[in-house]
Amino acid sequence: MRRAQITAGALLGLAVFLVHAISPVVTSGDSRWTVFQALSLIHRGDLDLDEYEPRVRATGYYAITRPDGHIRTIYPAGNILLAAPAVAGLEFALHAFRPLLEPIAARTASPTIAALLRGNLEDSSLAVEILIASLWIAAAAVLLYCIALRFAGLGTALSVALIFAFATPAWSTGSRALGMQAAYMLLLSGAVLAVVHAERRPALWTLAGAILSFAFFTRPTSAIPAAVFAVWALRSGRRPFLLLLVGALPVAALFAARNFSIFGAPTEPYSQPVGAPQGDLGAHADWSSALLGHLISPARGLFVYAPVLLGAIPGFLLWWRSTEHRTLAGSLAAIGGLHYLLISSVPCWWGGFSNGPRLFADVLPVFVLLLVPLLATWRTRSIVFRCAIVLSVAVGVGINGWTACNPAPSQWNATPNSIDRHPERLWDWTDPPFLRGLSHRT
Image (cartoon, rainbow, N blue to C red; front, top):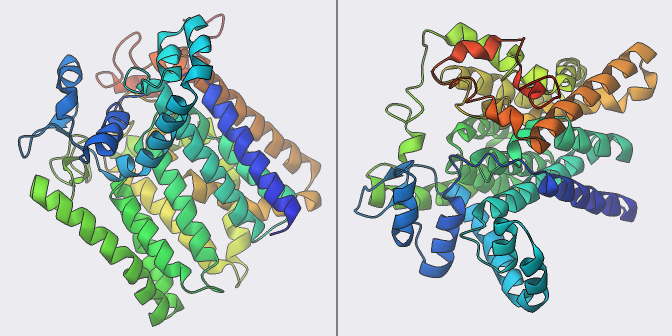
């Protein structure tokens, strides 16, 4: 990689991190215990929340279970393991620079920021979530930039990464909490990067296998890219498939052994296909609404919050016509399509209280990568086409930026009534959440 490409990638990551980190909206819900579990792992060597029982009790034991007598969350452990190094690094840095930060903390009006500057990560857990989630999204943007460089020039690669970071729900959903979505985007991007370079360096199939296995125990929907890449590896020959397994099986065995010892099953309660808190997977009464809603609902539609991703369709066709890129195009499309069917099979398909297409946000990297062949031929396109792309990017930046910087769109979930009790509001174009907070909106 040339020096200019490395410099551009570093500046890209820094810019994405800073913009996301200073965006004030926080949507911590399911992720509320992630920082506390990471601290428990760092200081006590376990993932339970026994030492935080008063805090857990104050939330009504939200998402808590006691399978072995210890206070545990129902969510996968991979997210905590991925966050723990960043939490440890942040804690170390804040304590090391405490003498310099204390005067700033003393003059800070925000109790959360003051606690953060003093190294109290428990009382500043929301700020910690934003910082680490922003770091993950910035890292994912850099990985997507590196993938795009494999197929296009510097300008196209930067455009793809910036579109991901600012014109999609990576901004309004991914970095607003330390949730599974941000982790999934990072891990999926890393797996794709490994696989696209595995043709020249077959050992990278092992790395991809390890990443995909870890991703499954971070976000169970990542079983889909794991299966798709397994097929890709098989089509490439027996050796790539065996290398993929060599990376995947040890990681899976460690997680499964841990989960069996605690929950009596290979996965945590959240990951169960039947009996999970989000409902059983399968066909349901609102399946048709889910299929449409994930695409065009004013509250949850992917192409409403990121209209530029419509370009993934012609982008796929361009790569599909090329023998060299057909396997990649088919694999990315398969991941996106199968994920779409999977999230539509969840009864609460809108994802509860959230901003935009939260359940679709996981696979944003595959849609963004399918824009590469389209943007790479930018100069040969008509003025109408180029104007359409620019407009769609501007709309995405406006919607996701507003939602990341103004709390009113998040409050739409509860006002005037709960979206979980009145899902018909998901189709109300007279009151889309992304317009909340404007001068003429409540």
